[in-house]
Length: 275
Image 1 (cartoon, helix red, strand yellow):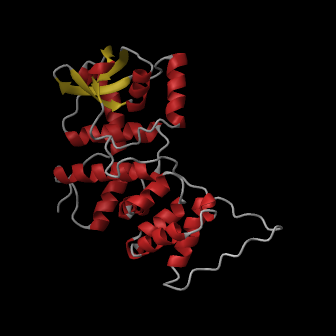
Image 2: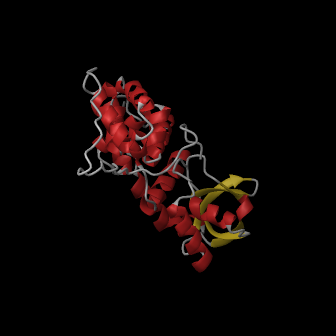
Image 3: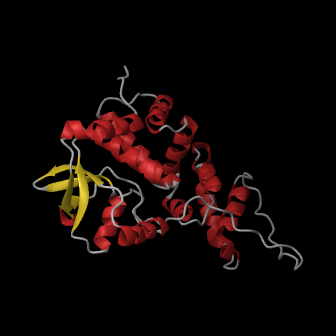
């Protein structure tokens, strides 16, 4: 498949910002909050987490330091390209209008590149945020006829678009191999991302039901340190069917097992990632 010479997410974002004023006669407009729509291309988390609460506090104290970027959606409606969280915070604070710049994009893929570029610059993203958004990018590249056929070539194209390494892209996409239960554990911080990546590898998919069963049968006391319990389950499952390790009560002089750190702290309600 011949590859088109297409810009990356970041170069598109830069050129859009540089030429927006000349191309779109760009002015800041106060648009009604009720006229703004969440973008269906957005798959980044909208959880009301610590980052959202910080945005809420900043908006309440200092107002909008950056304008919302929107694009026409028809009939007096506007699709958000950059600023989903700020608009959500404005809604929560009861703001009637927000400052917006209107930009038009030649096609859906260009709009997606701008959306991803803005979020990749501004937000602290989880592996699952990136996994979801990379899948959207892959789908849009396919619709535009710009997605190579081979899996390796696809990963390389996504890596070029997002300026991630190919190995990182492959690792994020592998997260979609996790069961719903394991995904929920990982996003809630109940399983380390190291264990999540290990179980998501194609060669290890058979381990997933073994790990879930091991955890479900564990005594309630062991579930108090859930990430450590999951890690023991992974170690046991990888031992190729050997008997589960003994769990003697630790001596009083020994330190308790420390909770494994997780990169991801968000809960999920829909594994298919409705925005």
